[in-house]
Image 1: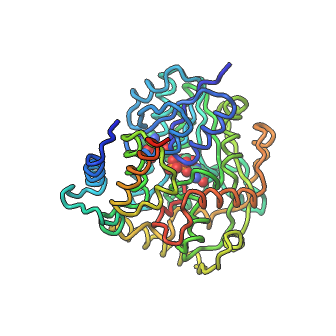
Image 2: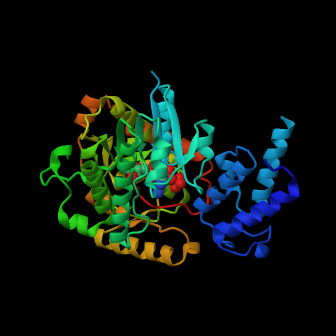
Length: 87
Length: 344
Ligand SMILES: NC(=O)c1ccc[n+]([C@@H]2O[C@H](COP(=O)([O-])OP(=O)(O)OC[C@H]3O[C@@H](n4cnc5c(N)ncnc54)[C@H](OP(=O)(O)O)[C@@H]3O)[C@@H](O)[C@H]2O)c1
């Protein structure tokens, strides 16, 4: 299980690159998953599902549905990890 | 004795509900997954996920070994209505592979989720039953959805003559929890978010997915081998249903009615746009949904009621529960991203 924060960003970028078929280096954190990167809602769910398996976290679907940008995805994973750590 | 079951397609809408019903009965359940499956819901159920794909018979048989009962809730339905021939062949291959793998793994029984689309609508105004015969040839030629469902079910039944036991279930449109791909749920999410801009009137039958799932579990024990069971709920006019959903959502109804010919043309155009440019979003109306709504009629689930103890709850209760699920899970926000509009 990975937990260090800088690698979360790299992992998110790599996975989006794979799903969207874009170069990881071209992804900016403010990018919108759908408008800028072309992920549809099912691909966004796949992204969050795979990340949650990688990091051993259990996001709520409404959090998944609300994560519309790369930044929001990274924050969501970080927040859940922090939440789990505090619990 | 604890039933040992495997659900193929357990990461999907019907599959998740079948797993929930099996777990409620104390069964031991494994769930297939693919690499890219959305496992968020399946993991919460605490069931082991085994990597298996209907394209690989040997690996599928390995995953099935030691399981008494296999629930096949993964027969494909068309994503787009173009390329029908390839999609039909694919669906047939998946259905046959499932049965062959089950035979290889010495599974006792396969419960095969098909669709009410494989049952002909009688000419007279009588409800369709399992004995009504296949859909008419013109419909099979015109609708990839009907053709795929019919071909896959026929192939599975034929393959199962060499074993194992196979029971076919023919559900109507299902509403309820876990429809995260927004299949039949488009009737709710589409009205809530305004994405369902157009519709075509006709008859539609809807059942609560939890009752349909329960009937699957019952079919594992009480279903007749080689038998088919219609699982239907309430039949309503589409226009009446959509207005009722808008009322339940407390949202204005702005959906424009199209004639059958207009609806087919509109859905084909929408699918073509979405296929060419996935970034432009899913089709606002899918061809499969149009075909289902235009062909819909009353169906009779007497056989499942008598043989499987199938008791569909009232449609209003099913709709309210589905609405609550979508609301709780963040699908009904006005700015919700475009979701699938594919009937399944
Ligand atoms: N929804 C309805 O209202 C309704 C009504 C009548 C009949 N049906 C029928 O019921 C079945 C299930 O429908 P659904 O609504 O539950 O669909 P769904 O949510 O799309 O689920 C389909 C499931 O099948 C799996 N799958 C697809 N291709 C596969 C493959 N090659 N190997 C292994 N697994 C595969 C999917 O896995 P991934 O998660 O990896 O994609 C998913 O778990 C379909 O045959 C559909 O036609 C549905």
